[in-house]
Image (cartoon, rainbow, N blue to C red):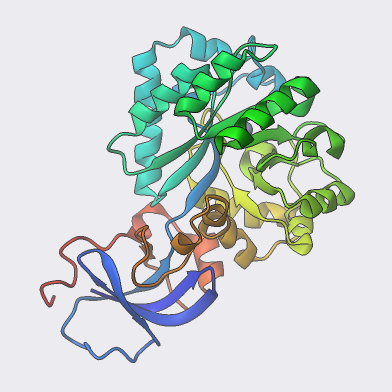
Length: 362
Ligand SMILES: [Zn+2]
C-alpha cells in the first residue's frame, strides 16, 4: 500500500509518498517518484505519527450526565468534590468498564498513548492497567497517593505500579508533600507532575520548586510565569476545551512564542469525550476567541511530536522505516497538512495500514 500525499512529523510538513508492507513503513520518498506505480493499492492522504493524549482523567468516564454547575475546584477536589463522590460510589467493575470504553474510543481516533492522572491510590492505577488491556492504547499512569501527610510505604507501593505521580495543584498540597513525592519519583526514575494555575494564578515558586516533569493547565499563568516555566525546561499539558467550560483559556500564542514544550490533553472524561482531534480543532479555534491566534503547526506538534519527546520516545514522532509505533494515515488533502489535520480530522478519516497491506503486491 502506498500513501501519496504528505508527511507531517517532527521534521515538519512535506510532500511525500510512504510505502507500507505488513503494516510497517518500508519506504519513504518524494511525492510522485515511487517506482511501484500501479502495482500497489494507493490512497491519498497525510501520514502522521500516532497522536498522544497529553492529559486525561479517565476514571471520570463513569459520569454519564451533565456535571453540576459549580467552580471546577468544587467538582474535582478530593475527597468531597462531585467526581470523588462519584468514584467512591461506583463499583470497581463499572469504573473499569467506563475507562475501557473511553480507551476504545481513543483507539478509534488513532491515539497510541494517554498520559493519565489516576486517582484512588494504587488500586486506581491497577484498575486502569486492567481496563487498558487489549485496547491498543497504552496508558502512562501518574497515580495519586491518598494519605496526607504522605505515607512513604503507600507512596512506594503506588510507584511499584505507576509511571509516576500526578497531584492536584500546588496550593492543595503542602510544600513537604511536594518535596517528598518529587524526591521519591526521582529516586525511582518515575515522573512527578501536578496541576498549576488552573482557576487562579499560583506563584511559580509554588510549582517549580521542586521542578516537576509536567505541569497541567497554566490557564492563569502570566507571560513572566510562562517564561519561568520555559527557563526551568518543564513541559506543559494544556486542555483548552476543559478550560473553556469554566470560562478560561491557556495562552497558547505566548507558549508558542516562548518555545514551550506543550502537550495537548482532553482532561476530565466527565466534561468531554477524550477525542484528541476535537481538542486540536478547539485549541486552534479557541485561540482566535482570545485574539491570541496560534499556528496550526504548533497545535499539531502538541499531539504528534512533543508528547513523544516527553515520553523519551523521539523516534515515534518521525514517519520513517523502522519506527516502533505505527503511524496513522489521515485521508485529507495534502496541500497544507497541519491546517488540514488540525481543523478537519474526524475518526472516520483515519486509517491504519493493516498487516496484509502491501506484502502481497496489492
Ligand atoms: Zn487534570
